Length: 454
Ligand code: SF4
Picture (cartoon, rainbow, N blue to C red):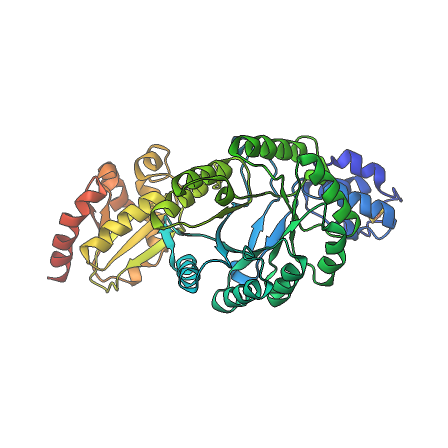
């Protein structure tokens, strides 16, 4: 639970405002610390003990953990609320593809190719799976290491390394340590042997307990040993147990501020479900119920896409509509006689319009006016797509330097702004009323393009 500024100030030295922290008083510094706008090290007069207490109190209730490196690093945790409607969820769960070292070479190649190639452009973002999980199912260390080496050499993805054999697990870690793999499982049986080996090259580790209670002992032991990049597996055997455990962990961390459970969780639909469809449904439940790494035995484009769209829906901030940047966009390779259309910056509106324009194969400019992420008609009703504001945008966005004609197509639904817009553009532009729906662009645009060229 976040600590209040009034609590923090009691821990500060309270020297006559020396201002060495850059704030006028200790109280001002405390308030900034509480809101995340300052760091503890700015006050040079804190004892190590107080500093440690403060760092602990200010740490997010669910630890931020990074798996992988570079562009493919996956950040999980750092969540602040139990339910999305309370504020927003922050880091979306990592969809993870399992490869066993018992699978034949062709299957392994197919899966590695699949995770690299299955991408879905979707309303301005690129949806894709995130991690590879490599499992030492054969019990043969050499086979597992060969698989780890192959994955390391042929993909840039982060990895989850799964082996009950500690020698195999840490040898695989050494192959890909620079990619910050997640090591699984650390258990009651192997934790003492594992701790010194984890500390040789620190990477995230996942603890597996037979119960939530056991997880508490494991994470406390790791924390005492200085290992804090941890993920939890409560060892749930079926979906019912899993939802119960995930709920308990989430609420203990966020409502009670219980640090030993303040870590992201991993879930394995791949080991819980009997068939592919059930596996996807179980994975979908974990998507809603807080798992941060979700491991699937396999997927294809038809099963992966709905899952990724579900994730996108849950992990977008409900306080802000999805929007695209205000500017003019080029579709194809437009020239000075290409049509110019205008629309609002709600992402869905923009992508519907641009897809419809693209389908006509007519190169064109689409001017996108910032309307705070609203669709055209709503934006007009809210006064954010008026003739005056659209006119001001057209003048400043640079489109006047791109075309020699002066015809601007507005959405048919806001035909009523035509006069006001022409006035705002000082009668230098002719405002053309376009189709009411994007489905009408196919018939409308080629005719306009012909007229402009002709
Ligand atoms: S540096 Fe420390 S003691 Fe000085 S004003 Fe800031 S918080 Fe207070």
